Amino acid sequence: MTEHTDRPRTHLLGCVAIVAALAAGGCTSMKDAYPAATEAQQRQAAEENVNTKASANIDTQPTYLRLVEQMQQEGLWFASLAHIDALEQRWGVSPESTRARAEALRHADQAAQSEAAYRRLLGTPLDASGYRGLGLLAGARGDYAEAVRMLKQAVQKTPTDALLLNDLGYASLRAGLIADARLPLMQALQLKPDNPQAQANLAMYLEMTQQHEEARALMDANKIPAATRVIIQNAARQLGVSTPRPSEIPAADVSLASNGSAPLALKASRSSNLFSSGQPARGTP
Image 1 (cartoon, rainbow, N blue to C red):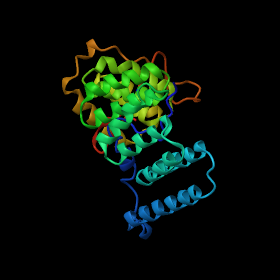
Image 2: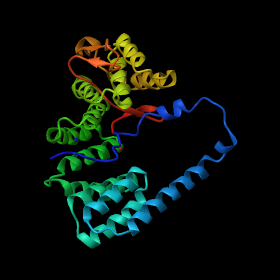
Image 3: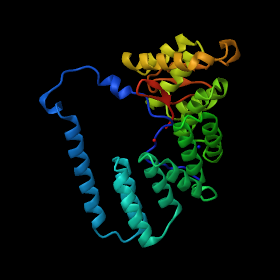
Image 4: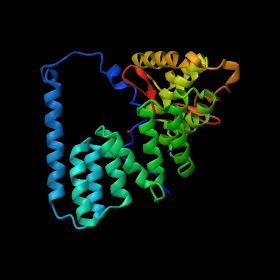
């Protein structure tokens, strides 16, 4: 899991509840008393804003595709499906519109329809997106072996995609392929060293392979909050039940950057992936 440009990127099985952990502290103000209503109002305003733009003079397919992409970046998956219908009625079906439809259907919990759309991308210039989407769907239903197979196909086509490598590494961990997870995880974090998902997943890998000092150094270097560290450590313990002995797994070659320009430097390769609400981290949206 041809250039792959999925936006927004969702990671494999539901990101770690790091945001929830960070939000756990602090006081509650009156304006926070009705978070659901506030979120609904913000979502409605965002949708109205995009719909206004969509009603304007859209004279090219790329322009309309950009508007659909903006809607999806704002989480308006259902609304984007209506605009994809309108776009395809006017300009016909394209790999780009099919990818947008597959992503929207996946986020709308329409797994079967989403899978069909991703499969239509295979053999097109966007087949890496198709393989990645199929991998994410497989991971979502708990079939991590299939997720690894699909994501490997995507990586073969877009080998420098850090978020895709992150997904593959996490799927490998969940499939029990701990040693196989090391390379894509380390590559992902080296390609995107500031990515919090990459940092969390490498830390989880290190914890799972009993490299606790290295995991602590990585989390210290990236100022990962205490609540998030607990989530990472708990997830590592949950996934590590069937982990091979540490002597069977190569150590991660991790060193802290000395110049402060990058919070972490990895000498060989690197890891990435996140966790979802109290459950082990997942790959990329």
